[in-house]
Image (cartoon, rainbow, N blue to C red; front, top):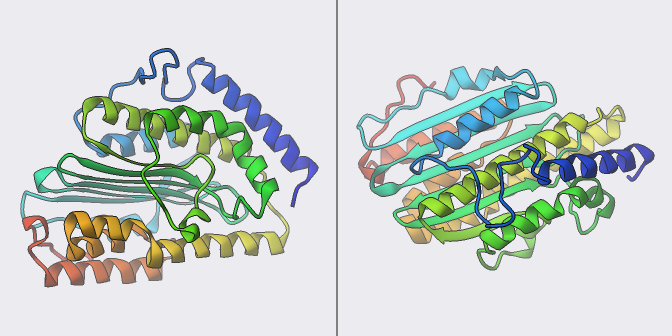
Length: 311
């Protein structure tokens, strides 16, 4: 799997990452001396994260609405307590950029943001899963590897060797959130941020800075990505994405955490949307399953939902 081109890719990535972490304007403005981010996020709203991601991605590639956007982007609550925003975009090298954000009553907020590369590229999957309920925050932020980094050292070196300092910087501010299963760890990278913390402006600023830096790191990988022409490698990349999506849909460890926080009904609602696949048919099935579940249990966050525009 290792080649001269992947070695050159790793060297270019290390130089690019070193320049950004050196404080020359790249990244989210992380201040090494104080351990505090120089950026300041507004009062907690994950919509700000999404807008930054869209604006930053547009600086690197030509972003256009996905056909899924028109079909599923109009879910609206019937009351004024819960807001749902589902966005879908595509671009050269990006198979799907999709974002789900939920803002509910009593401080409930959910963000599930992901960018899937085209299968002609073995790039990691950018993943940001944030859950906030009252004063509790649960965060997973990662560049999920397509291939197990323990078994595929060349893949690990290619994509993560130049980003280890980035992960270590945020590991100091966002401590490890607790034990995960071995199966789950197969889908995480060496720089994964998995953390839990109490809400505060400072911690929100740190998380926003981490989101910006990780997103810029992924876009840097995308810029350097070389299109694969070997049909067998393209098939392997596609299958790797499918394995990841299957895991997210069926065995995501976040479900048990959500169930403890929100109860089983609401956990199922959220997990049914945070594992959106990349093809139209499975997405349609998941959206319809979500709506069916919500309409059956109309007490979730005190809201009920309209299905008039989703068929």
